[in-house]
Length: 146
Length: 145
Image 1: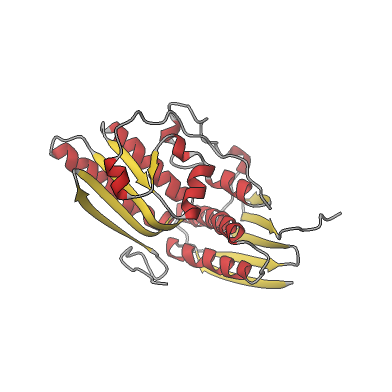
Image 2: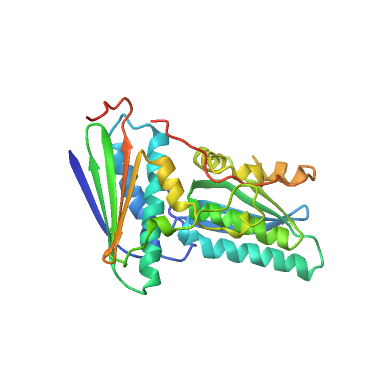
């Protein structure tokens, strides 16, 4: 296991954030664990991406790439919800990439995929046709599989 | 029964350590499937996050005690803080799925997630602090009478 230190919050912080442009989209790629320690930097990246689009007088188009995130909790879910709220508030589009089973399971458990577009790769997120956003997000479905 | 205890400073940079220690302890029991260990990791993360935030709200430099008991048919984790407590019943729930203000709620899923992912969840809180008890059963556990 590698232990990225660029989170900058201490010894046991396991995440990193990279931001890059691709085909007119801002990709915010998160590596590691999306939880309370990760929240400030990711929120900062999202706000910066939306601000840059506003400065350029462009429609914000953001991919939140969680493809390399292998742990997600309610703080991470809150980050995604906040990103979606900010993107829609700015008149923009936000799509999420997720592929790790634990992350996908949690997204489906809280039915986040009913309100946000969740795709398997950055390429598919960028190339997906525009569509009306899903209508709502549920709370939590029951689950006790022993 | 085996017991693992971990005492950490109430700081965000110890959150990962807390859940990794509990997950490693759970992995000692070979009957736990990876999915159940993931459930426990998330539940412990929620409980420990709440404890860290409770201490942060008090600007305190206290510590959090995490106790992990491995039994034949279950794993029990207790997360104990001394941050003054809260009323679990007074914690607001996130709005319904189709509510217009759902996106305004970036928080509020922690307790529901614990209750969903653990087989037993108990929150005991007083002015002295809060203890969250989480239990995950091993598969094919024989119900206790």
